Image (cartoon, rainbow, N blue to C red):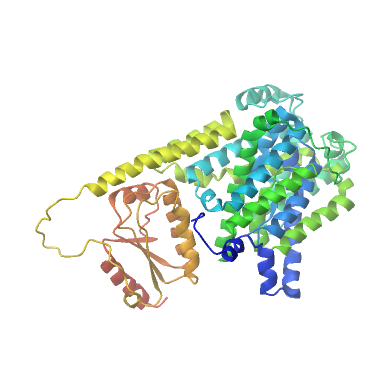
Length: 568
């Protein structure tokens, strides 16, 4: 627990950057070569994304590159994950756009600085452990809502609509854009559709190629050589010359800090949640373990530094981190090199960006929005219990129609109320015990008994879940699997002591089922109670081809012996 007494040396070890750990383990020429290639690969992916996200946030494209350079370098150098890639992400587009619209760019600088300090404090107080336990319906709801807003914000540039001022609110925005659709620019639409087609075709047939960069380069070449009448970065942001300058810090008063506090909190919350989710994804891909509180401190320092040079909020980017791992990265130096490559591009090749059509960047962001929506996870949670569905839909609707800050606050409160209600039901179920046992023929013990290592055949692992399996403990199932190491032939999951499962718990079990299937591990679940069985069954998780259900551990062990006695 975060506030338990530990030796000072042990406490501070939680804040040692993974860069230090990697260098202590021994870092050679071959490792640097791998990190060099991975860093270059990620930089190629990040380049068009950083510019597109900056424009969508209501600022200039150079701000995205500057953020990726400064914040990306610090997140990798100081962070608690070996493979984290930091920079601007889609999650910030909505809140950054709103802050700039309401408080100006200097208001964004103050809010980002405040968010950075909040993240540093959260890390030092070791709150990273708790941030990972945000309910899945809340995270999926606001992420999908952000995706819808990003997609809607790209309609103007995708279709080349001549709209002077697009309303910020969702419904009025759609009405104004809908009225302007008859004036669609055919050339702009052709460029956007062509770029989108290139991205989708490459994703299908050449998934390892840099899809976004290729689409943007081809679109820019088409506009240049065929003289297509469509907006480019050079035409909309004429005379833009990116530089690292210390901006004049805005005047700060208590009243201004109070006005910006909700936005700063939202930025800090999003940065914390997304960075730790990205670190968890990296852990699951590599079998490593990140230091969550060290990661929060690094995110805070990176955001303060980004604000100091006039950049945008930054966090860990899941897709770029996954690309980094697949490209063979060995440690944080890959992320630092990615920032270096972006800096070289900004200093040497920036004039080439003038030919990039905004329609192509709109196509990039449409794909980003689709990826963010996680439609599979959304539809999967729609099969969860009605309470989880309500939290998901309310959070989604509030994000799109009202405000992201309100959506997060309401979603978390609703999830907490729902949990308390379910806990009361679980206590009622567990309290329904008879004072006198009936005389029965079956003498099979129904209480959970420990299983000794001697009882487990070679290649069989048994794991126990006790108590309600809700969003607060769902993450621990994945951590338990990471500790197992080599995938076993059979995994026995004992669930007799689990009275209830919520949507987050069900999602964790679904991940476990998928993981076992991927590694050829047979999953046996013993003693599952009525409520978990109903929830998992309705969500399609208890597929008889992937999960074996048995009444107790004795039957589970017998089935495990049958499986391991058969040649793999």
